[in-house]
Structure formats: C-alpha cells, structure tokens
Image 1 (cartoon, rainbow, N blue to C red):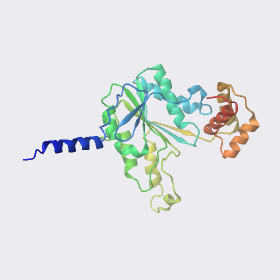
Image 2: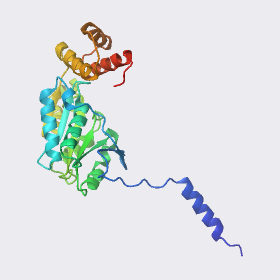
Image 3: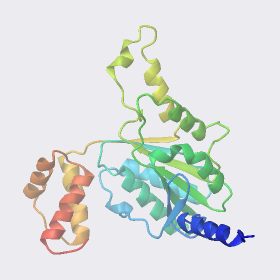
Image 4: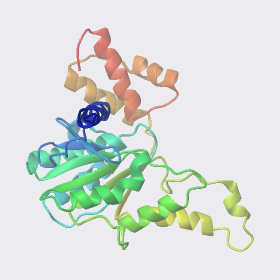
Length: 275
C-alpha cells in the first residue's frame, strides 16, 4: 500500500509557502506613530512635522489643538477634535506638530495612529486593541468625507464619539480633518423639503457637534501668506522677494500655508540647499 503521508506533507508545505505568514502584532509602546490599514498596524519611527512655532497665521487654532493634545498626553480630560476648512492651511500639519510637541514634553506617553477613511469600519477593532494598552493614543483621520448615499458610516462615527456601545476607550481621542465642517458636501436639494428644509443639514452637523473641539481654517490674506514665507525662509536661511512670492501664488491660484511651503522649497532648490 502506498504511503500517503509524504505527498500530503508536501502539499501542506507548498500551501504554507504560497500563503504569507500572518503579520506580527504591533508593539504599541515602541513607536511615536502608527499607520492602521484596517487589519494591522505598521510602526513609524519618526513623525514628519514642522515645529509649532513655524506654523503661522493659525495662532488661535494652534493654541486650542496643541493644548488639547498635551492634556491627552498627560492623561487629563481631553476632547475629540474636528479641524475643518480651507485646503493647505495646516490642518494635518498642526495635528502632527502638536503630537510631536506633546511627545517631547511627556516622552512615551502618546502615540499618533493614522487611519484612512477606507478603514473606518475597522475602528471598533482598533479601539479594542488600543483600549488594553498602557498608553494614550490620538487616532488621526485625514480628509474625511462620505459618499452621498452613505448614511450608516456618519451614524457609526457619531456613536464612536459619544454614547455608543462601540465608543472609543478613555485612552483614545480622535482628530479628524475635513474641508467642510459638516464633513459631507451640502446641496441645494436640502432646501427643497417642504416639511423641514433644515433636517438634512442638521443631521450632518450633528456629527460635527460631537467633537468637543471644532476649529475652522480659512484662506489667508496677502500679509499672512508673506509672513508664513518669511518664517519658513528665515529658518532655512533663504533670501526671497515679495514680488516673486506673489507671482508663485498667482500661478497656483491660491495663497495658503501649503503654497508658501512649496515656494520655500523652490527657493531652496534654486539655492542648491536641502530642507
């Protein structure tokens, strides 16, 4: 009789080679930041962020966000945060910079965890993992938006923020950026309801109202734009001219912190310097 053990063993070995090994569990105490893909987390050795002092034109927003992140790092009462408004005005940069500043003041106490909008459905699993760790976490969702026909995800997010059975644990806070305070785009059709034209808008704003801190970012004027450039250029030891800076903004159709940084990057390239 033919021995079937060897062929079966060979088949099992082949299947193991074809299937990748399961990813190792993240060490949630080892890194300053992580990226969550919906199933696993990858540690990030260093957070790329400007210093808080370099973020100009958003002083009020900077004070609110950095103070709240520091409270959370220290284990004090802290809010979930919604940063909304104009593109390129430092919403995501401020989240990263405030985290770095808090980590410098309270080493090892806080980690940033970036979760993509496409992994929102996995947040309860992430909360379950983080809730058992002896560390505090800021879960960061950048440029959040929902499809027009998606009513379930906003409701779940409201539940996670406040009062639901899947609410985030006490050692976790959320930081969300969006181009609009209501997060979803509004349409004129919202005003066509003869019964209560405010219902749709109010339902969307109900999500924004769940954040303890909601700060708006607005397009900067010419003096603010030039002040941002001056701050970046001085730190890098770069000379610049107002006319050249304004022409750069005009070609891009916007004055913003991002446009200012791109201009300073151009200056550094012209001068043969690294930033």
